[in-house]
Amino acid sequence: MNTLLKILLTALAVIVLANILPGVSVNGYLSAIIVALVISLLNMFVRPLLIFFTLPATIVTFGLFLFVINAIIILLANKLVDGFTVNGFWTALFFSILLSIFRSALFSLLQDKE
Image (cartoon, rainbow, N blue to C red; front, side):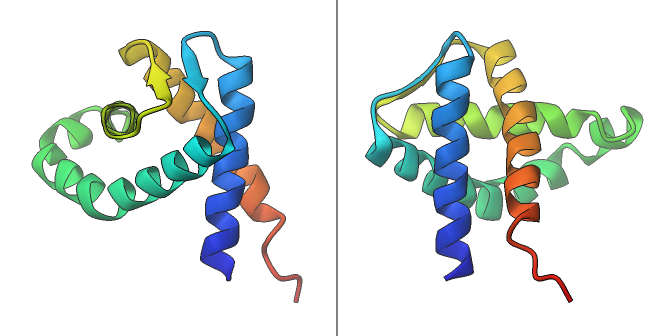
């Protein structure tokens, strides 16, 4: 249940960011849910491989290269999902940074208060 809610919140963040940022568009709610699902799957399977193969660059840049990896994940989602477009690397980089911020804020609302 928690995973489904996180995917739906990510889809909400994708819709909001697509309406705010120029150069990013999503065709509808179903496309946003598919984008959120694809991004979560890419983060599970592709991101660790990219981090492993680019570990020297990540170490040299003190972890800032992880932003580039996040932008690559967004560009891959752009290629895989019809109805989701990102107009370039810098837009994908800015979108990934804002998506991370939005997801952190939304996911903090889900945490149990003990």
